[in-house]
Image 1: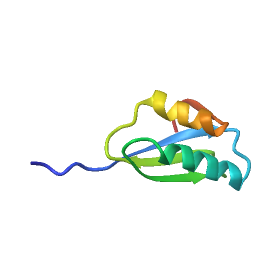
Image 2: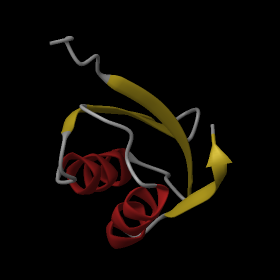
Image 3: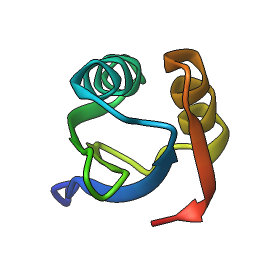
Length: 76
Protein backbone atom coordinates (compact mmCIF):
# COMPACT_ATOMS: atom_id res chain seq x y z
CA UNK A 1 0.00 0.00 0.00
CA UNK A 2 1.46 3.35 -1.01
CA UNK A 3 1.21 6.47 1.08
CA UNK A 4 -1.02 9.12 -0.46
CA UNK A 5 0.71 12.47 -0.83
CA UNK A 6 -1.16 15.70 -0.26
CA UNK A 7 -2.11 17.77 -3.30
CA UNK A 8 -1.44 21.52 -3.25
CA UNK A 9 -3.09 23.82 -5.77
CA UNK A 10 -3.13 27.61 -6.00
CA UNK A 11 -6.14 29.48 -7.33
CA UNK A 12 -6.50 33.14 -8.34
CA UNK A 13 -9.37 34.81 -6.47
CA UNK A 14 -10.68 38.22 -7.53
CA UNK A 15 -12.40 40.79 -5.35
CA UNK A 16 -10.55 40.28 -2.06
CA UNK A 17 -9.58 43.56 -0.41
CA UNK A 18 -9.25 42.96 3.35
CA UNK A 19 -8.76 40.47 6.17
CA UNK A 20 -12.51 39.79 6.26
CA UNK A 21 -12.18 38.59 2.66
CA UNK A 22 -9.32 36.30 3.66
CA UNK A 23 -11.34 34.80 6.52
CA UNK A 24 -14.43 34.27 4.35
CA UNK A 25 -12.52 32.51 1.56
CA UNK A 26 -10.51 30.45 4.05
CA UNK A 27 -13.66 29.32 5.86
CA UNK A 28 -15.49 28.26 2.69
CA UNK A 29 -12.53 26.44 1.15
CA UNK A 30 -11.71 24.73 4.45
CA UNK A 31 -15.21 23.24 4.48
CA UNK A 32 -14.60 21.27 1.27
CA UNK A 33 -14.14 17.51 1.79
CA UNK A 34 -10.50 16.45 1.99
CA UNK A 35 -9.07 19.94 2.56
CA UNK A 36 -6.22 19.95 5.11
CA UNK A 37 -4.99 23.55 4.84
CA UNK A 38 -5.91 26.83 3.18
CA UNK A 39 -3.54 29.79 2.83
CA UNK A 40 -4.90 33.00 1.33
CA UNK A 41 -2.45 35.65 0.12
CA UNK A 42 -4.39 38.91 -0.01
CA UNK A 43 -1.63 40.86 -1.79
CA UNK A 44 -1.27 38.24 -4.53
CA UNK A 45 -5.00 37.51 -4.74
CA UNK A 46 -4.48 33.78 -4.39
CA UNK A 47 -5.70 30.89 -2.30
CA UNK A 48 -3.44 27.87 -1.88
CA UNK A 49 -5.28 24.71 -0.88
CA UNK A 50 -3.69 21.49 0.36
CA UNK A 51 -5.98 18.47 0.20
CA UNK A 52 -5.90 14.69 0.25
CA UNK A 53 -6.77 14.54 -3.45
CA UNK A 54 -7.29 17.02 -6.30
CA UNK A 55 -10.40 19.12 -5.80
CA UNK A 56 -13.01 19.45 -8.54
CA UNK A 57 -12.70 22.97 -9.96
CA UNK A 58 -16.47 23.46 -9.75
CA UNK A 59 -16.40 22.72 -6.00
CA UNK A 60 -13.63 25.30 -5.53
CA UNK A 61 -15.51 27.82 -7.69
CA UNK A 62 -18.73 27.27 -5.68
CA UNK A 63 -16.91 27.71 -2.35
CA UNK A 64 -15.26 30.95 -3.48
CA UNK A 65 -18.61 32.16 -4.85
CA UNK A 66 -20.31 31.35 -1.53
CA UNK A 67 -17.70 33.50 0.21
CA UNK A 68 -18.70 36.38 -2.10
CA UNK A 69 -15.71 36.39 -4.46
CA UNK A 70 -14.84 35.04 -7.88
CA UNK A 71 -12.42 32.36 -8.96
CA UNK A 72 -10.37 33.68 -11.86
CA UNK A 73 -10.09 31.50 -14.93
CA UNK A 74 -7.68 28.61 -14.47
CA UNK A 75 -5.23 27.93 -11.68
CA UNK A 76 -2.85 30.66 -10.51
